[in-house]
Length: 350
Image (cartoon, rainbow, N blue to C red; front, side, top):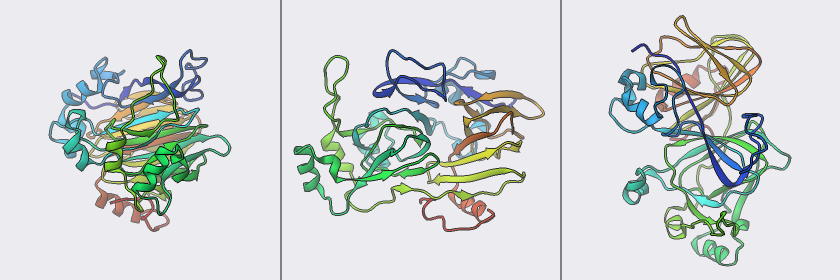
């Protein structure tokens, strides 16, 4: 079976806090009767839209494809490791926290047993957009419970103002909430475990409040200092002129890059891992000697690990996300070949 890029169809999820227009990423999703909050780009039920696995779900394709497509890091038959999604909030999301792998493997086996470390890249933001990220210094469990009882919990969180182009790393155990007025692309471990602690009194279409998970949230919340916060973009080496390649964030679960260019460039591919690419803006063609696939804004593509080559040829100025499961030692070596070697402490997390 000859390897070729695979386009994945997104799944759009209604959310109380979602938007009634997903333009400009998805201009066809406008004037919606029901607000949509998320577009899952690599959900296990997303369908492959091209080539050999057309019509199959990502779960089916992942297990059916040759191991060489997945990469040597994924020689076993485990589940797909990365969830990538867009988030479209017009209201505050709930105050929430996610467990780590150790907790999830013991207490959430039926839900897959994986924790959730994630990162957010802000595609666009309105003026004064902000998130809540981590607790203020000195907030302990008793203060947290008092804030919950008095409905002042939000005041115990650290406010972080965000702008288009910012990236934030959110390790498991960090209480947080995304605010309104932004479009976010999220890269995370493949997990949907969320423990809500406060939801602003909202109710669903049937008048029922959404479920809270306070006991579990208290068990996994990090009440001390942690690594959550804005990252620093780091330059990565690139062969072509007029191409900007930057590392946004990396940990053992994912590494995510941003590519910006009006000129063609080669997307790195290698035997150890597959890649996912998402076009944030612009349009172009994925090309090699064997294929040529048009790629549009908002699309997500799976690139097999055993591709001989893959080039992106932009038709107009474009921004692309590339994400994969890294070998951190190899990534650190690559950073040292970047044009401006710098501290990686705020970008690469062990």
